[in-house]
Length: 154
Image 1 (cartoon, one colour):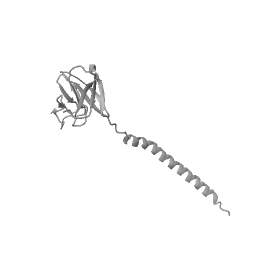
Image 2 (cartoon, rainbow, N blue to C red):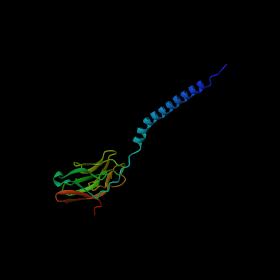
Image 3 (tube, helix red, strand yellow):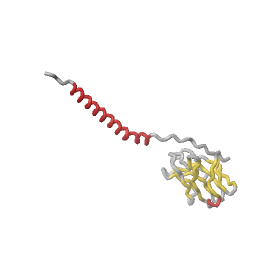
Image 4 (cartoon, rainbow, N blue to C red):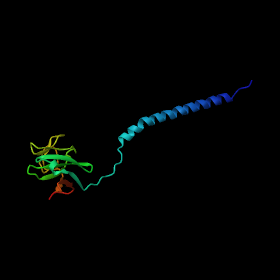
């Protein structure tokens, strides 16, 4: 009696091949599932933008007792034209939780809607949870344009 030993070896190699193929397929499927999730959770690297001054707009775009929020690099800045026509510029992020503030012309205050924080027109905190005042910036009029620059107002 002759025993055929090659046939089981050939069958075993097919089974190993199919098992390996299925294993690689499952790993590839898991990769397509988790790769987008990981890419979503890891923020992309963004270069730091260094800005020293920005143009906020024309003087005619600012009626008295109004405000406009402009981008200063990656941060918002609120430019306010007071009732007397003078300009002031402040960082537009609340010092409590970095919410964006807004100017309320009727009350003459800067207000943070997140937790009802209030600042006066010079950025000093009046009430609410903000621990410190808004950072003041320099706002100047040059050639009928409002320019906002880094630096503290004297």
